[in-house]
Image 1 (cartoon, rainbow, N blue to C red):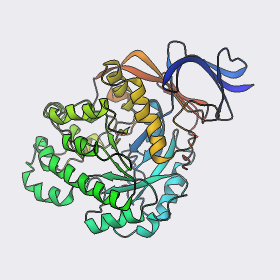
Image 2 (cartoon, rainbow, N blue to C red; image 1 turned 90 degrees about the vertical axis):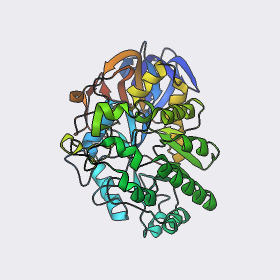
Image 3 (tube, rainbow, N blue to C red; image 1 turned 180 degrees about the vertical axis):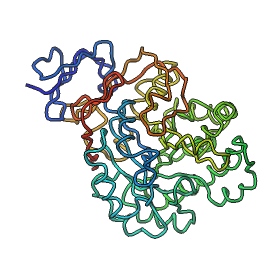
Image 4 (cartoon, rainbow, N blue to C red; image 1 turned 120 degrees about the horizontal axis):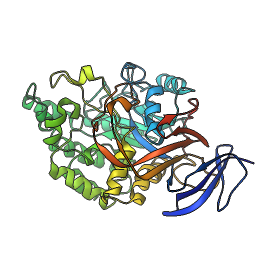
Length: 435
């Protein structure tokens, strides 16, 4: 007898939707086929689409440090509420996750507290090159995070010599917050107090492309893997499309959904993030990148802050917005609108994260793979409401938006952890395993 059978679903297998059943035992997929019976529990997925468990490769859960805003437990609840089965979590905490002691502390904090599966980035600094060289087999470590420009927290590696040191010693993928610190400092005079519309003028497109060119040049020189996070400019889309292979990149759902100046008119400092939401010419080019399979991942850059802080006068308001719970509804709505295919979305949130970062036994519906699934209803329309956000911050930039297509069940290790918006069971997420 198996533990669970998912019956009658349209299952995403080998780039096709196949009407079949999936049997699960001991956290693994043991059989895929028609008319499977004999299980302790059966889910009827008639009329629903069964995807491999979706992975959000950029989240900030703020622990240790700002646990009034978010912690590993609440962030993982937001993840599974949105159909996300695994997350990569960022190191710009307080203290930062930039040495072995703090990395182990993160793993200890996550144990039996996170609903989803997890891995943590190791933060690069100007002087931890030795640690970066020895990360290869580190349990639960997805990669190295490099802040080339200053953002939330105090992890910053701005000097070219220090960036070179990071890449030279990197034993894993280096994920980069790519903004040029020198240009950021030079542009500070362009900030107008109280006017968040000046955010993309301060953190200009030149600031982004200048940094990204430098990162790619250094990564290619050392033949190391670089993953450029939250790409926002048309210049970067065109440049990065010429540098594939060891260079991969991410776009966020928000940069594909809202743009300047409207977002700042409507949301004010709630629309403030780094790198910024830009005008429609950049938005259009980001979509060109998605449609033509140029970008490699969609990550939420879930970066919550409390309302009381977001409502401070710009530029004293912090940058960042929550997104792990809304990543899938936002992107499924875009699928329904014909802006990308479901197959493209599965590559961006399931298959490509596995290929780029070397995650074992995830990202595909195959026998002997881990039994993580995101079950979606492509026909169900939901309205995002602040009161339904699981994150401690209690708000979303998409409050009031209606999206067609949404996760209705989240299954992790063969156990149903979310059904119809309700979170079930205990937090039993485990560290991701990398090859």
